[in-house]
Image (cartoon, rainbow, N blue to C red; front, side):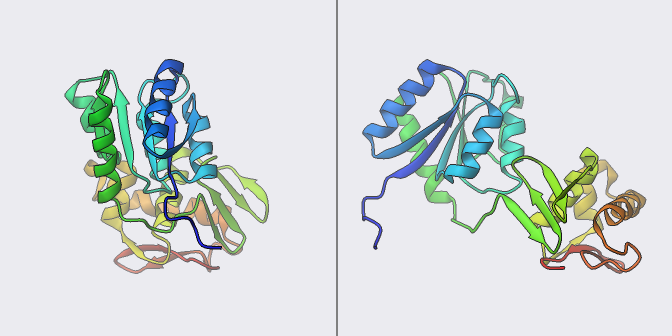
Amino acid sequence: MNEPADKPTVALIIDDEVQIRRLLRLTLEAHGYRVFEAENGQAGLLEAAARRPEVVLLDLGLPDLDGVTVLKRLREWSRVPVVVLSVRDREEDKIAALDQGADDYVTKPFSTGELLARLRVAQRHTQPVPEAAVFRAGEVEIDFVRRVVLRAGKEVKLTATEYSLLALLARHAGRVMTHRQLLKEVWGPNAVEQTHYLRVYVAHLREKLEGDPNQPQLLITEAGVGYRLMETA
């Protein structure tokens, strides 16, 4: 069956203020959106994975996770347009949100007309790409929403740095990532020459994920260049 031509745009509101969610729902539904809501960051991430919205409206002052953290975790697996709505109007807050992948930043209180215009712009500028909340390669499975890694169905305990490195490689699976790219993304721009960090952490990941760490099938070394996470193993 063909999809109807006027299929509504799916929007997800992540905000702990009931009044704001109600206002946004009424506004968006009046302009043809289908709306889902979440009152905290973790619920928002789960809703994003389940509903696959076409646009997200994200508050920064959430009760469980800071909105920038929610945005960073969402960007581990999704390129959905995100418009931040926040009472925070400091330049550094705006920069932090935009650096983590927000498409726009609107300060509360806002006019509904401006908000709708910003949503349209964010959606126009975003190219749809296939995305998945779970990555699988051989026996290894990464659930980006729950930040859980499984091997042969059993959870593998990773440190925060090990997980960040693995998730980054998984988001670029099949492609070589250079030492410099990996160090900058995981450890920061001041660590781009510290290649020994990578050797140590890649060895840890191989010990936990490979059948034979000495003959890796998943996490491959590209001599003198970097590492590649294979899409199948």
